[in-house]
Image 1: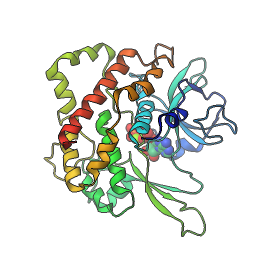
Image 2: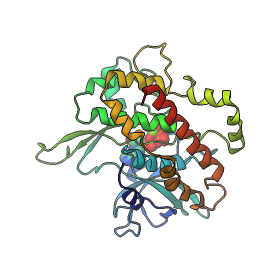
Image 3: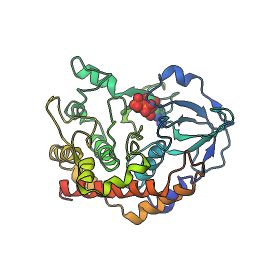
Image 4: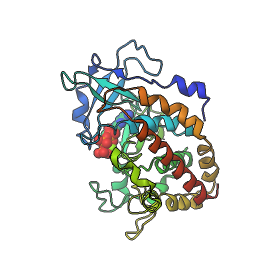
Length: 326
Ligand SMILES: Nc1ncnc2c1ncn2[C@@H]1O[C@H](COP(=O)(O)OP(=O)(O)OP(=O)(O)O)[C@@H](O)[C@H]1O
Ligand SMILES: [Mg+2]
C-alpha cells in the first residue's frame, strides 16, 4: 500500500464542478452508449485540485436513473484500489450544472487511462473473438479466464489479474465482462515503434458492485444470516462475470474462482495476501469524508449505505482469506 499521506493527496473530498470544462465531441462517436450515460470533457489548462491533471480527458459517468447513488461505486473502488495497491483510474465526485440545464447532475469524474495521441487501446472482447470460436460479444457467455491465461507470458500478467480479481471480489463486482478490461499498447502511435509496450488497462467500470442495486430501505434485510450468506456467496449472483473455463455447466462463486486462480498461479497467493493486508480504520478514514461531500439528497451517499458498503467489503475479505487460507 502507498503511504497514507500520498493516498490522501490523490483524493478530493468535495465535488469537482465541470460546468466550464470543454466537452469532447469525439467521445460519443467512438464509444456507443453503454448501460450508463456518459460524456467526455477536457479539464482546463490550470486546475486547482492536486488530484487533477490539466488539459486532460475525463469521463463524466452518470448513475443509472433508478439508482442515482451508483456513481459512488467508481469513487469508492478508486479509493479501495489505492489502499489495496490495485490500479484503478482516478475517479472523483463530478458535478455538472449544464448537463441538464437548471439542474445539478452528479456523476463519477474518471481520468482517461491512456494517451490517445501515443497509445492504442484494444478491448478484451477484440481478443476473445479471435481466440474463441463464435464468441458471443453481446452476452459474453464464453468469457473465461483459461482463454485469457494464454497470455500469461505478458509482463505483469499475474499481478494484474490477482489485483483485478481481488478488487472485484471485495466489491462484489459482477460485471468484469470482456469489454470491461483491455490492453494498452503504449507508444504504438509513436515513430520509431521500438519502444512499444503491451500493458493491461487499469480496472475500470467498477459501478456494478458494492450493492448498488439494493434500495436503502432494504439494507436492513441483511440482518437475516441466511439472506446475508446467500447474497455474499450464492454462485448465481456472487460471481465474477468471467467464467473459469469454457465449461457451460460451471457455477463458481467469487471465492471458488479465486481458489482455482491461486492453484493455477501459486505465486499469486502472496500478492493477494498483500492486497488484503489493509485494516478497517484505514478504510474508514478514506471513505468517511464522502458522507458529507454532497448535500443534495438525491445524489448523496448516506451514512447507512456507506456503513453497509464497508461492512460487506470486510465480510467478503474474510471469506476470501478463508478460501485461500491466508
Ligand atoms: N477511464 C477511461 N479511460 C479510457 N477509456 C475509458 C475509461 N472508462 C471507460 N472507457 C471506455 O469507455 C467504455 C465505456 O465505459 P464503461 O465501461 O465505464 O461504461 P458502461 O456504460 O458501464 O459500460 P457497460 O456497457 O460495460 O456497462 C469502456 O468500455 C472503455 O472502452
Ligand atoms: Mg463497461
